[in-house]
Length: 142
Ligand SMILES: *[C@@H]1O[C@H](CO)[C@@H](O)[C@H](O)[C@H]1NC(C)=O
Image 1 (tube, rainbow, N blue to C red):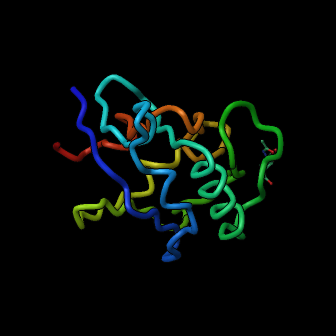
Image 2 (cartoon, rainbow, N blue to C red):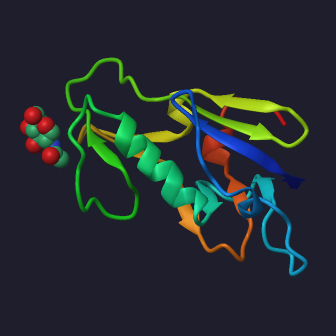
């Protein structure tokens, strides 16, 4: 099942990210737009949104060492020995005014026992759709 939505803004740690509005718009070719999908695990955001989201986390997370060159996901932090991981909030604001505020375990994956936490979001080309996957939907009923 999937649901087509229009994103208006992404907020990381209280900051409305400066993502060009047209990033989210539906193009005549069918690019753009965002789906909440039950068949995809991770979330995908079209460029340049993904790069801007990633940079916002890198800029705001100061408490944990960044693991450079960790495969696939980015950013990843060494959180070994940390009991309660404190990471910036992540919110999606939709064009209809709805705000989706996620608990941290929905957008950071903890890899145990390595003590690594990675942003569970990937990038995809501007010509595709953004997808909010099942990992990010955990404990929400849509
Ligand atoms: C994470 O930090 C701990 C403690 O400082 C260290 O022992 C461990 O090797 C680090 N893990 C990685 C993947 O760098």
